[in-house]
Image (cartoon, rainbow, N blue to C red):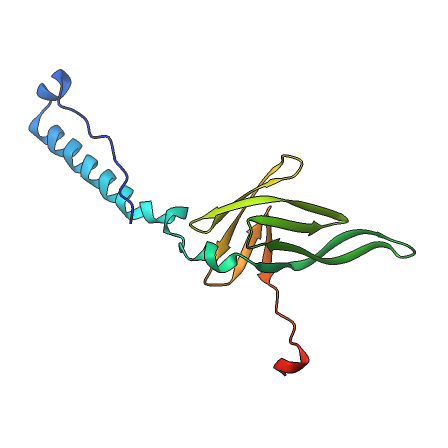
Amino acid sequence: MRLVPVPVPVPGPAMRTSTPAGQVARGLLALLLAGLSVAFSGCGSDDRDPQACDWARGQTFLSTEVMECGLGPTDGVVSCNWSVKLKADGTYTWSHSDVGDAGTYGCGGGIVTATSSGGATLSGSIDLATRQLTWAGALYNLERPAFSAAQR
């Protein structure tokens, strides 16, 4: 859990002239705000599993929804799952629509930050409990590995 500093009023001339009840009320308010700050400080990304990045390296993810993948030769718009591959060497590929994107990524605390070869910045997050990646606003599941004949 990360503690977040909360500003507490410093006694000044205005506080010295207030009533004792007002001083008690201000003190209780400061304690209440400090308690809420501690209680809600765990809601941010700092509590994500630090092992999520290690787990995701080398994995391929497929979008949970079938999405638009460009125009087919005769059928108009074609649908498919988009994919993201976070390679172990710190590079990624992202196949979305009829576009292929690639670049480098960094990961810390389950938060992925990527830079495409064209300089665009992308971000995502890894949920180790569900084994899902949220990438550029879309949800992706871990791709199920294909089994070879020797593994069956």
